[in-house]
Amino acid sequence: MMVKARAKINLSLDVLGTRADGYHEILTVMQPLELHDVLEAGPLEGDIRVESSHPEVPSGPGNIVYRAADLIRREFRCGAGARIFIHKKIPVAAGLAGGSADAAAALRALNRLWALNAAEEELFRLGEAIGSDVPFCLLGRTALAGGRGELLTPLPSFSGFGVVLVKPPFGVSTARIYRLYDSLPAVPGPDTRAVVKAVENGDLKALAGLMGNALERVTASLHPEIMEIKKALVAAGAAGAMMSGSGPAVFGLCAGPDEARFVASRLNLPGCQVIATRTV
Image (cartoon, rainbow, N blue to C red; front, side, top):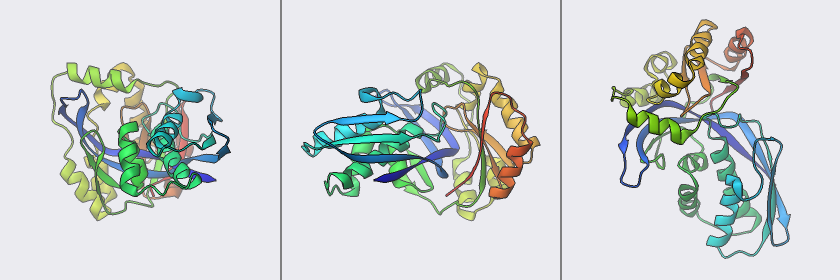
């Protein structure tokens, strides 16, 4: 059984404060991409085995996919096993929800493989327990997300626009970025309402001028390359550019896939991974 696990970008990201549970309250517009991993799941007698094509992705209990498989098996008191192989295409530790997308795909795959017949709301409940981005990855469409990211309001599709992803040759710790964010003076966040309106209208030009990420200044203070990548994307022809999530991946929005490929071809960013894809 093969299941797609799509990457995401944040078209806006605001941090509203710290919650009683220690997590941060956020408000973000999230968008799935054509870029995806593929999970290959098959039966295995009484055991869960997770492997990946990427050397930096752990196997066994350290993998979020293993945790998702173990959780759904325990929740449904299922004695079956599975072998899951992750064909990685989404850059690792990039702010693109690659791990969360894989976990969401694992929940869907194992629900079918083990004939659990779990309802959508049950999968979303399990996804929320695994990670903040997993519910969005289960939803798989443009959405406004609140809470920790699990409170989802579907938005009209923003599909068909070109996206150029640039992943620098380093990763960042999301937990560290949020800790540093808490230590900085507050500044106004993005106008999420206006971003939602631009998405609803399919207005790329308006969206490009409205995008904002409250975490960008934090990650860029540690890695000034973030701002240089943004400038390079706009100079190469992207309508707008922004860091996704806690980074360090940066994306540029374009009118369509052809424009994205053209922008990607013009970039000269040694050491960076550059991917042209599109919104779905």
